[in-house]
Length: 227
Ligand SMILES: C[S@@+](CC[C@H](N)C(=O)[O-])C[C@H]1O[C@@H](n2cnc3c(N)ncnc32)[C@H](O)[C@@H]1O
View: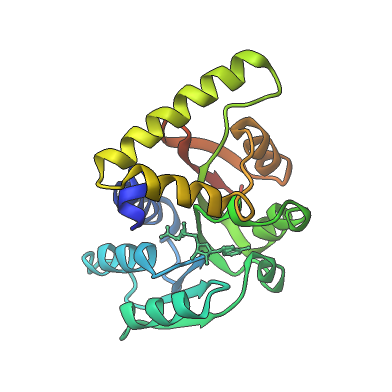
């Protein structure tokens, strides 16, 4: 389902995995300690599976790989555990607030199309927790749907055209107009979009260096490096 409704869905997972591995091959593997990867809002585990598959293709990397996955949905956690059977995986039915339990633990953290579902009143402190959970030199991959609106009329005009193009994208992937409207209504009370400059600024304020990676209209991904 995600492939039909999220532009560049698999491409992002592939690209982010490749980038993380290349970064660690080049800069971080002077000390051969096991690498830890956390996926917040892991859903069915597609990112972790992609990362682990690519990682094990390189026999020069340390063989140990620690995977940790969180999702508030028990059903998603079960699917993720099934998909990653045989890997060293720790999985917990927890939401993003559970990030506060970790300290300097992960080389790589993935937050892919999750932050938009965190209720606004629960967002304060999440980026600080993310920063604390990341090891120095670690990378956070952050993919997000955002709005172009900045309270000005021109921005809302652009945003409505962009939303129309996104409807076309889903129609082109086999959804009907009724299905799209039903999904839009269902998300009204569970997804809260932000302007991209706002959350990029907030990641920066938490201490990360943030670099844009991919972009398709109102969908984008970033890598945030903890210096
Ligand atoms: C669009 S899916 C993205 C899944 C996954 N990151 C991927 O790229 O395939 C959103 C996921 O976020 C989870 N989620 C919703 N609210 C969350 C929260 N507050 N904290 C963590 N995960 C959340 C949902 O259960 C769902 O599995």
